[in-house]
Image 1 (cartoon, one colour):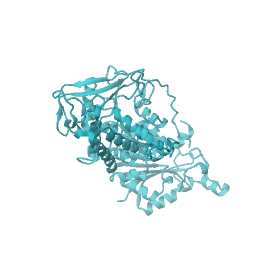
Image 2 (cartoon, chains in turn orange, red):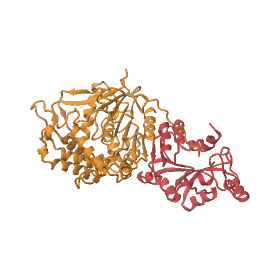
Image 3 (cartoon, chains in turn orange, blue):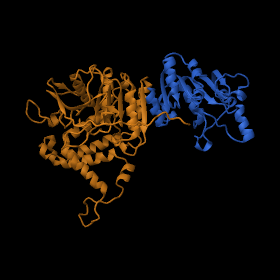
Image 4 (cartoon, one colour):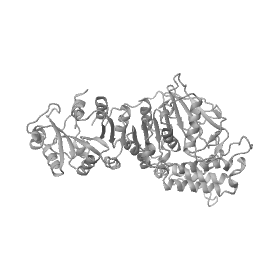
Length: 379
Length: 203
């Protein structure tokens, strides 16, 4: 059947260009859902595009575990690293900065400028470390809501996020249903599977058992780099797929020279993962890793009641996207959210993309993903 | 609208007659979401589409029709009894693996079930089979067999036998002639090109 009414997009794309981060500071004490508080809250964020006079064109992007507020553009001539979702955010792109005012903040508990275990307690002058209160996804969202308040924005046009960002997105529409016009949650789930918790805990144990961790009170210049690098290496495997790794690395060897140490880097995949681990420790904090993974493990929309009951307050139309090769947050866990939303009579769509990049598929520029987000936002 | 689209949308007006204002409608095998969009405009329904194909879901997104990409049986199993006022199978039943079980599930999840299908007993199909030894190719089914999905066509008589055997109540039936537009009431198994049923369960 000649059944396709989808014209291919001919994108007329531009770039966000140079961007600078800002800091939002709230001097009110910030109280955490599981108890405890911090005397002031700081969130580092970036914005792209312009907030209109009606203040109704803002889109909040929530980042994943190892992401940050820098999701589009570049910081300068010297620092030309593009934001983590640069292909999705910009003039003429699906999250179109000529139409929308895009906000992305480093998550509460993070280590890229927002309040987290590595921040200095304003009263003691020392880092919080493990005195930082127990963190939940609900706290992350509550902090973002304060940032949104600071712009005088009542209602966001959309909230969008993948992975941990997807969970924040769901929490947004549950906790602040009146403040979100629509939402997109990608590669996420209503709660962690036993397997996801198991991987996270193995990562945490790698950090905790590194003697340099020192019960969390390490010197930032001399932290548990070994433990954190191993945690990252292992987690990184869960973000890829068997097929993806096979086609990217196979059994390709790094050096023809086998005279080196018996256990030195031999295969290409080892080199890749070690590089991932080594570069991660230069930009990430071990205690933040512990706090964020724990918050994700505890996230559970099936509790205290059923998933259906938790999702009942949602009012905005939503799109949930699963990826066939994602074995960390498998399609089933994404589908389940939409099944529950439909049971309670919500406007929700589930789409599933056949991509080989595993959990990280949502970070890969693919025409169909691009088109899906574009269409959902421009409706 | 092209003649092909007109024919494809043969059952829209009839289904719209059977749907009440503001009802909850589940369209299984929803394709591009055109029927749900139509029902939303005419009857302000809350509609959900189901289709296995990503590109179809993309079209539904474009139309603002909520849709679920996945297997019909999987999604049906997740709904409690009588979750929807109406469950629609518009040219879907002939492609189901276990039509009997899926229709039974449809009747559990929906208070009413609509089934629309091209009648295999239509005289043109008989002539094509008898004289030419070939299946009918038309605007809605334009492709040769080797480019088509596996399909399990059935006739008005066969469908009604099934309903009787399963004690499914036929609340309404409308048969359309070969143009899929004008209604035909005489000898439907021979004269109807297309048939639409409004069903309920006896339970």
